[in-house]
Amino acid sequence: MKTTKRIGFACKYMHPDQTQKKKLLEEIQRPLNTRSTTVQWLNRQTVDVAEERLWDIMVHNIASYGRLIEYVGSLPEQLRMVRLGSDVLPVYTEPTWSYFWRKPDVVAYCEKHFATVGRRARELDVRLSMHPGQFTVLASDSEEIVERSIEEFEYHVDCIRWMGYGTQFQDFKCNVHISGRKGPAGIKAALKRLSPEARNTITIENDENKWGIEHSLELADDLALVLDIHHHWCREGEYISPTDDRFVRVIDSWRGVRPVIHYSYSRNEHLPEGYAHDTMPSMSKLLEAGHKKAKLRAHSDYYPNRLVNDYALSFLEYADIMCESKCKNLASIKLHKYYTGEQYDILEQDVRSFSAVA
Image (cartoon, rainbow, N blue to C red; front, side, top):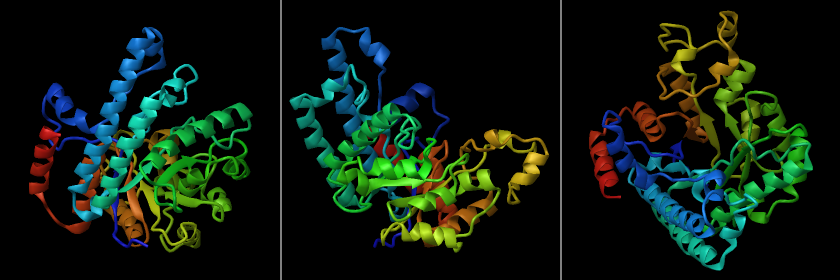
């Protein structure tokens, strides 16, 4: 079991100097971030034009994975964790265009270049994950939706498999919510229909609505569980302790692999005016004051509350922390600086240099 404590970020690289002109920022950030397209745009083109666009996006996006991993690998060891974006191969499961991703030359390219990405991640000791979107509803009461959700999950697993993961339990994390009316029973049924690599990588996260940690724990013997502490606070109004028996069971579900939790914080504009971030927010008091729970769920840009940061970082003794914040790597670096008490401005200079040449 790896014991290095990790703080990671999700999907998108942001340059440290966000005051630069938008066009310049896009030029700097583009090489590390994925591009996409839409079914509507593709359907308006000739087949040749559409396929050319998909090929160009594929080449760029797999390379962007590689550049992003190189960037993360240049960070201090405790920051070497990143969630890869789901749009790396657009319209992969869309019926009209999915054929493109089965073409022999396309598959050969993916196999070769994803393998390079995965090999480099292992060389740099970067911990990776993915997170299929909200329309992946494995516990739906609609068989059609379950089938589409399995296809979407297995698309992510194709990428994971090409990168050389999925052969061991939780060598790569692919996270979804329970969602769906069938709840934990629906997840258990869907698991039987997933590939071995999918079963090795799937994790289930508690949400802020219907399916809380008590529901996730019904799956603790079947797969690894992710605790989202902000979701739990939104749903229960509770700051669950890292020594709570429920979290101990979450840890046990990882079977010796170091767990991951998710950390986010409410946006300033949805907290009381003049909120000083010097107390632990009380959900009950915020609701009594007329604040809407739905708005309090929204993720902040950074982590401005020292006490909540201390609380979140107390989990680092037991689990890695995936930062779910709008300012991505900038927020995770800032949280890490707070945790360590270190200041490393030279790192930001290195980031600028790396971005310019990527």
